[in-house]
Length: 499
Image 1 (cartoon, rainbow, N blue to C red):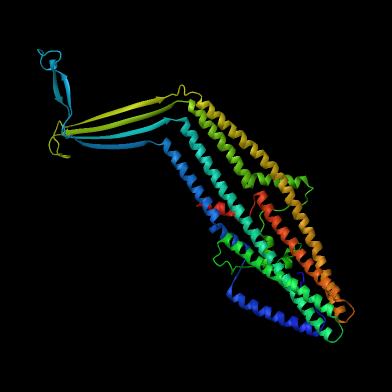
Image 2 (image 1 turned 90 degrees about the horizontal axis):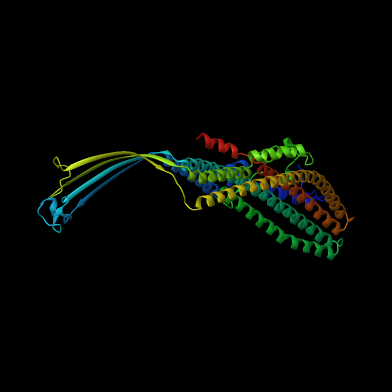
C-alpha cells in the first residue's frame, strides 16, 4: 500500500490530523450505514442482465429465431380451407339455341335457361407439399446463418457492455482519487496557512508567505469542487450503464492508490477482485512474435467482430447460392377436395336432400421451370457475388487491424505497468520530501515556497501513480475485448445455450 498523507511535525498539526481522521472515520461509518459498496463483478452481472443495449440486441436475436421458423414453413405442407355461401336474388339466366330443345326452331331462336338455385354453397380443402424447391432450401440455410450472426452480435454487444462497465468503474475510481488528493492538498495548505499566520503574528514569517498560501488555497478550492463534480458525473455514468436505481448513491469498492500491480496477494480483497477480473491471459513481451501470434489466434477464435465478419461472409455466400438456385426447377404435389351444394327457397344448410350436393377430388403434380426472365437473375447473382467479395475484403482488413490493435494494447499494458512501478517509488520519495520540507519550515530552516513545492510534488506523484494503475486496468479491459475473452460473457452464452 502506498501512503498518501503527510506526517506533520508540530503538535498542533498532529492534533488537527487526529481530529480530521476521527471525523473521516465517523463519516465513513455513517455513510456505510446508508449505502452498501458494490464490487466490479456484481455491477457487470447487473449490466449483463438489465442493460438496455443488450435488451435490444437480444430482441433482435429473438426476431432472427422467428425468421428461421418462418423459413421452415416454406418446406412444410400447406393446408387451406375455403367456404362460401351465395344468395342469388335473381338466378342468372343464359341463352341457348332453341334448336337444342326444338328441332323445328329457327337458327336465330334462343331459349333462356336458368342455371343455379337461390342458395349456393361451396367449400374447398387444398393441400400442397413442395417436393423440390432449391431456392427455399438455400434460403433456409441463409436464415439459419442470419440467426447465428445475430447470436454472435448479442455476444459482441455483451463484450462491449462489460468493457464499458469496466472502463466506467475505473474512471470513477480515478475521479475519486483525484478528489481525494485535491482534498488532501486543500487540507495541507489550510494547515500550513494557519501555522504561517501564527508564525507571522510572532514575527517569524512575513506577510508575503501568508498571502502566497491564501492565493494557493483560493486556487485549490475550485479544483476540489470540480473534482467532486467529476466524481458525481462518473458515478452517474456507471449507474446508467448497469441500471442502478440510485444514481447518486452508488458506492464502489477499491482504491487505485492502494493497488499493487506486482504483488496481487498484498492487496485488499476489493482491489484483489478488481485486478483478478480479467478474461484473457496477458502474455506480455510485445517483441515476442509467438506471443503476438497467440493473441491473434485467440482473437480469430473468440473476438466477436471477427466472428461476425466470418458469419457475414458465409451469409453472403449463401445468398449468392440462393440466387443461383433460381435457374433450377420446382416440383410440387397438390390435392383438392371440393363440396358444392344448392337449393331454392329459404336456405337449409343441413337439411338438403339427395341430388342437391356434389363432391369432387383432384391430385396433381406441378413442375415449374423458369426459362427466360430477362437479365434479372444474372444481375442479381452478380450483385450477390460483389457483396461476397466485399465481405471477404472486410474480413481481411479487420484481421490486419486486429493485429495492429493487439500489439498496441500489449505495449500499453507493459508501459503502464512499468510506469506504475516507477511512480510508486516517486510517491515514497515525494512523501519523504514533504515531511522534510514541513520539518524545516516549522523550525524556520526552510521557506514557504519549498513547502509548497513539496506539497505539489507529492500530490502530483500520487495522482501519477493512480493514473498509471488506471491506464493499466483500462488497457487490460481493452486487451480482453481485443482478444474476445471478456469475463462472464462466455459463461452467460453457455447458460443461454443450455436453456
